Length: 429
Ligand code: ACO
Image (cartoon, rainbow, N blue to C red; front, top):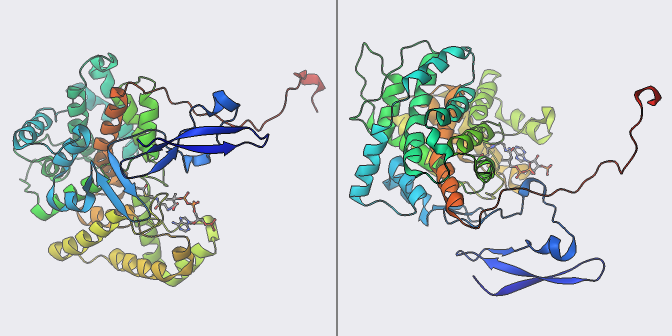
């Protein structure tokens, strides 16, 4: 860390020197932790647009340059050469696994893939119209009841990490099977992580199911690309909840709920719904874009724009290539893909989007790919959650292992009434 300071002059003429923290990629931050004690001032940063909540060694993003790296390794290389399980190990443990470590990790994930039989009853209690994100969050939170040693903050965390990574995949596939009234399919130990998920989603007892290798590759890529994105809304939620000492299942369940919102993980579902809307109402892309620009109906171009990327989201580039490859391979022709391409072309040429640096984000293509491989729309955000798990776990672990962690507790600027007396109910006007 460099030995630098920043000087702040207050309106009353006082001056304070604040330490400057420099990250390994030369990112500079002013450390304001002593500001309140020294001056009585706090900082105000609604939406945490410019606030570093922690130091973290997991993921590096340069949104202006379109760079995303996990533990230093570019996302493009991981998407091309790695698997989701290997990338999960990298994120959680900090290094790529050796061959032996990878085999052990994969075996552990296989051995812990079953969901406690008693938990199967929970599915019956949910209405058939339940959104799978509601089911997923409830089931993950319930896992803490089945593995109560997670409540002991000094107990080893490794087994819980393996359990949550492995079982969320099973819980997600079971939720889908229940929602369509089919019998659940138990995992098959001979299959890899992603192939096993596809088996649990699409196999039926009457027929064997062999996952297509390119579909398995596409699923690996999708999950890798979603695996972490530093201090986003859901990850910050996991850290905030975990900072109180809550167990990993509770912290991850909170992350799942934060991800559910349409401005975060719900966007991939909204992208497909938007494309369907355009398609069914005649496919007039120009009119749609112009309505968005005029802020008609307060709509946004879903799958465009990002708080961090002010350039093409590097994940969207990888997925665009995969979408082309997969559609060719599967021989699928989806009018939504044509609408998406037209929309992207129109927006990238339009001053409204260019001027605001609004480029396609990861969700612009992920929904179309999920649709092509048979994942139903309400499951899209569940797929995002499955992918984001290693990131949430890695951040939770990093935070728990850091002795300097404090419970998260932001300040505020109070903007309400000044002190006033209680008025009796008969005297109120
Ligand atoms: N379509 C149209 N206009 C947009 C869009 C969009 N998708 N995104 C931002 N804008 C406009 C805003 O209206 C605003 O315009 P103004 O200056 O005229 O008021 C300007 O761009 C800045 O927008 P903000 O909301 O301040 O940008 P912010 O960084 O807070 O928002 C966000 C980022 C939430 C992702 C936003 O771009 C958005 O809503 N996108 C659509 C939803 C989406 O795709 N979310 C997925 C994000 S990726 C992920 O979570 C994995």
